[in-house]
Length: 152
Image 1 (spheres, rainbow, N blue to C red):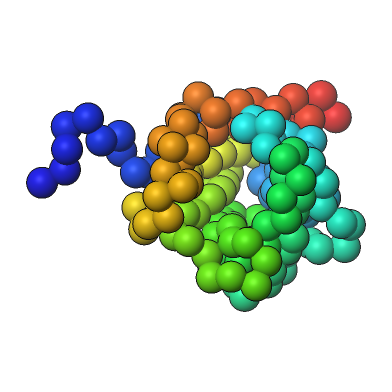
Image 2 (tube, rainbow, N blue to C red):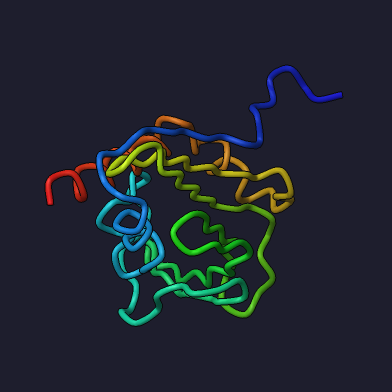
């Protein structure tokens, strides 16, 4: 039985954005664009030319603390769904996952759901940061995406 004080290990946020799914997805699937909308203020840079196209792709990001992360794409459906598991270079992912799901709700509007799942995270050093990744932080990323595409 889970400890009552233990936070949920799956956190998500959702919002409708006034833009088509393809436009939004392009910002998510291109790692070089991710620092522009990262609501966790964790991403610093990614080299251009790493656009995700399939499960099995790996893209590299540098965090604001200067750490390099290899992100292993584990779910991919162009324009609809993408998820990756970050890892230190050359290492296996420690068990957390970032997922984006997009669903057209009507022409020019898309429901965007962002999920952070740390159910399988066993690295004790990473658990405090995982706990700090709240739905509000996930929503901040969605809100920044909305600002970028709705203002375009």
